[in-house]
Image (spheres, rainbow, N blue to C red):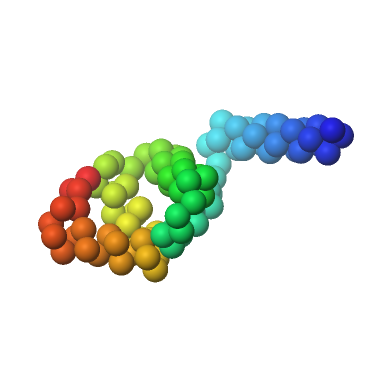
Length: 94
């Protein structure tokens, strides 16, 4: 239980520092989301999508730029699947 309290305290401190940096208008860099290789695991997929959405929201990108960025994160099976979508002109435009 103490380990969870330490983790929560550390996270709260990190959020506080991040918020302070944003308020002071310092340039803040956010780690890019990991690539997605097509692994079929619901938790992994959901986490990856959420990380991409958070990154895109932080950057303030429009739909087209967001779409283009997300496609650069696809690897292996995921990239092959997306390639078939592109070739059949079924890919979304944004």
